Amino acid sequence: MQKTDTALLPQQGEQAGNSAAITQIIQPRMADLGEFSVRRLLPVKERKTIGPWIFFDEMGPADFAVGSGISVRPHPHIGLATVTYLFSGEILHRDSLGTVQVIRPGDINLMVAGKGIVHSERERPELKASAHSLHGLQLWLALPLAHEETEPAFYHFPAASIPAFEVQGVSVRVMIGSAYGVTSPVPQFSTTLYLEAFLAPGQKLLLPQAAELGLYLLSGQLQMAGTALQPQTLTVLGADAVVEVEAFTAARIALIGGDAIGQRFINWNFVSSSKERIEQAKQDWQAGRFPKVPGDETEFIPYPA
Image (cartoon, rainbow, N blue to C red; front, side, top):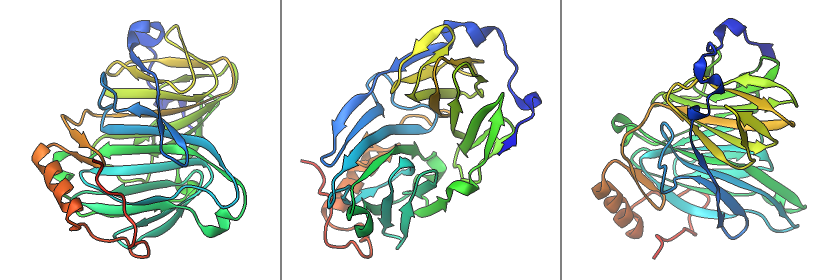
């Protein structure tokens, strides 16, 4: 683990202790997906995106008995890129490109849907043979106009390839984008930020600046700009706000942000700047015109009634 030069930190300004830096605090909505529940933070009525991020779920933590586990049948996407990040457990990813990839804690998996992709999320039989758990984040990036119809692609980055370092003594990992003078190897299609940090009790961290930025408190207790934050809430900051957080207890945070992406429509698993494009994707899925997932061809999730 390397240390970052403090000269690369944003300079603390008047907003650092100003509660006006916080523009919104989003409470999670619980959604039951059958095998497990998720906390959904984006999109909500009051806030559709933070930078290019248009979807944010915390999966679990969920405990599975022997023989059970997640089994998400093949389903389609357009106009977005999915990001899967696990804290515990694993997921077996398959897609219509022929990708077969086990996702483990700390890995970054970026699946670019572009003009259309189909994938499934299941578990290996070896994992289901014993009791196990699953906990992680599922996020979607809306692709910029120039990439909405790009060719689909899949990128896998093992945990060891993601930059890990210290800022003000705080452990930080930059999953996507650049912060504190460090850049992730994960591709970005527009200015994007995704990082996590672990704060010990009493530690402080000056957050990176971004045109749009949200802080998700996974666990612990934090203070930001004079406001105490509660776990499982997503705090939205003002543009380029200079804000420092302080941990009352051991805390884990995820930061998402970047440049605004513009208006996007979301319908089921489809994201687009065009309602007509979403309608076409819906018809294509119902008519069976999307490609199949090799090794997982027989089942699929129908378009919801």
